[in-house]
Structures are given as structure tokens and as C-alpha cells.
Length: 289
Image 1 (spheres, helix red, strand yellow):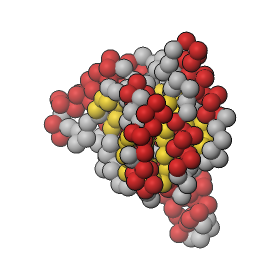
Image 2 (cartoon, one colour; image 1 turned 135 degrees about the vertical axis):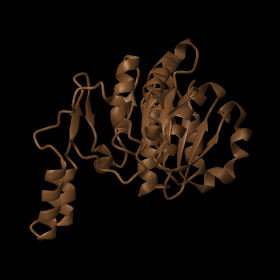
Image 3 (cartoon, one colour; image 1 turned 180 degrees about the vertical axis):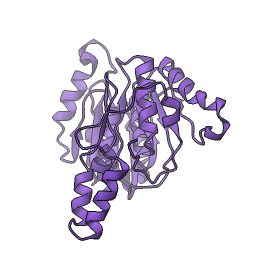
């Protein structure tokens, strides 16, 4: 049986996936025997601790046929693999979610529907038949962010505050995806909503919070001007997220994207349209430096 490498509080979700075929790993299976051999090499000083960690960075992945789950992404990048639920069936999302959860740590599915969440929750509910395996932590659905979240590790990894700003109320779903992502990656996150350039005094009322941020995420549609304004007020990285909010000539976020890419504020960088997840992820990595 494969060995799960985790120091987080672990719920035995593996028992909930008993209908799945046995996991198939790449050509170096990280089982207990291989792990003991690796530790023995370190003990005998044939391998340095850093070399051992480097070997572990590439192992293993689990093949479900329709998905190859990268269980060691957290070791390489600091965050487990995240499920992009859009385009997947509810059963596929549930199966991937369960297998990720079996290896410990936090689990996140973005662009998820309530139907997909029901499938995930139903899989977890199988534990009710075995009270001794009842989960201590349960997945929850964040409807505004369209995210399924299982948070077991609540340790703070970020060194400062990440502030998420939305230009309008219509931009909040994208902003909330960034908030959920950053929170799950162990950050202190604050949000400031509906402070677009049409009423700039609303933004200026929050200058104190902006000044204390270590990283700022700004989500805006229409002409996408807000990130440049925020960038001119602070001396920290500003991650601009164009949203698909706007009328015809907004071209579903393209106008905002081009405007942000042409920002004259030198501390502004840009992610893809509606990519709140990407902004939250990159902000989290910056906040750990």
C-alpha cells in the first residue's frame, strides 16, 4: 500500500474511496519499504537530507484513468494540487477530491457547482456507516466563490496581510475565489469591495488597510482602471485580475485585460480574465518570501 506523507490532521478519506481501483504510481513507488530505504541512506550519510527531499519532490502520482493526481505538489510548490471542476462530472470531482483528501492537508476545487459539491459530500457521508471513521473536518461549499473547500491545516504561512479589492459588487465572485485560495494557503486575508474609480473617495477611505498590506489583489471589469490607481498608492506588489464584467465593448474582460497590461504603475502585474484563483495563489507565494 502507498504511504501518505503528511503531518496534518488526517481524516481517513481513503476508506471512503473503496470503490476506486488501487492507485497506480509512476515507476518509483513511494511505499513504506522505499521510504525506509531512503531514511536508511540518510542515516548512514550516503545521502544528505537535502538530496532525500529532492528525490521526494518527484514522487508519486496516482492514476485514476481519467486523472493523474499529483500527490507531491505540496512538497514541490507549497500547496496541494487544486481541482479545476469546470468540465468535470460530479463523480470525477468527488473521486479526485476524495483521493487528494486521503493524503492529508487542505483540498480546494474551483469553478465548482452545487451538484458537484453534493457528489463530494455524499462520498464523505459514507463514513456515517462507520462511526469510528466519521470525518473530523467536512467539505463545505462557498457559493459566491464557486469553490469546494476542505480546510484541515489552519497554520499561518504568510508573513503579512493580503488585501483583496473589488472595483464593483459584480466583481466579488472573482475576488472571493482569490480570498478562498489565499486563506486556504495559510494567509491572513482582508477584503475591500465596491471601491471602483467611479467613486474614488470610497477607495481612499481604506488607505490605511492598503498601506498595511504585503500583497494586494485588485479585481475589476469595465475599463480595468482600478489596479493602476491602487498601484500608485502603495509600494507593494499589486496583482490585477480583469473580470468579464461590462457591456459590449468590454469584450468579456478583454478591454480590462489590455488596460491592465498597459498600466503605467510599475508594481502591477496581471493574471488571466476572471482568474481569482491564480491571483490568490501567486499572492500567497509572494507573501511567504
